[in-house]
Image (cartoon, rainbow, N blue to C red; front, side):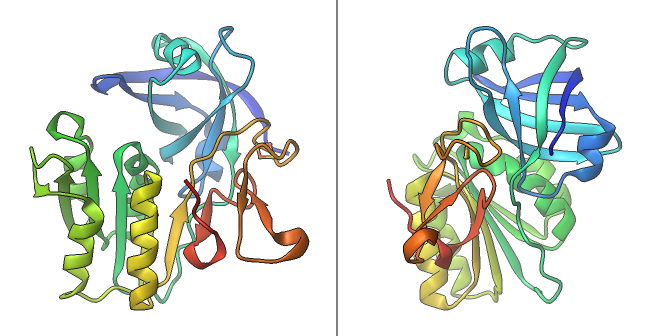
Length: 255
Ligand code: FES
């Protein structure tokens, strides 16, 4: 059973308008975290349900998570100050698989989907990384990824910075000239659908991290179910425990 812990907030920064970068203290969570797992956080009194927030990085007794203010819960969470305690459950979920034989990994993230990919990029060390954002003012973590990846290509949907257009198109062009034997992705559903198609057309294995509404976070409420390509009782999987990371061929991506 995953532990619920009160963790002290030790660093806090607003890295873009409404996007907060938090670091909390927890030897246990930092020691256990695998890339792509998440925390289930009690944001405060404004909301009954915990919020699932991806772990961006973990190690040396510290756990980092970055979130966008999107409603009452995250609004209250963003008001926490350094020294305050946060009620956290985790690490939860099934994260990214790092396969030993993979030689040319590609990571692709869109928007707030770039955050759970950072620890992965650090561990892979030699990934080609694609980061997509709406516009220049939403670009975050570019330099941090540059310090840990082989290549980093940043794009914006409106062309205000970097590659002009959807980041999946940038990756597709890149794959015409470069080898790749595993794609890791996280981001908005249209991007994930495009990435899945590009990967499957080229016969490249692809791991996808799904974002889903959650209730319990531990497999008990079924709020987070997603459709798989299996039949019968295995037709639906739980994003909180079977995922959030799945191989692209395992799941049907619905809007
Ligand atoms: Fe309750 Fe997944 S959130 S089963």
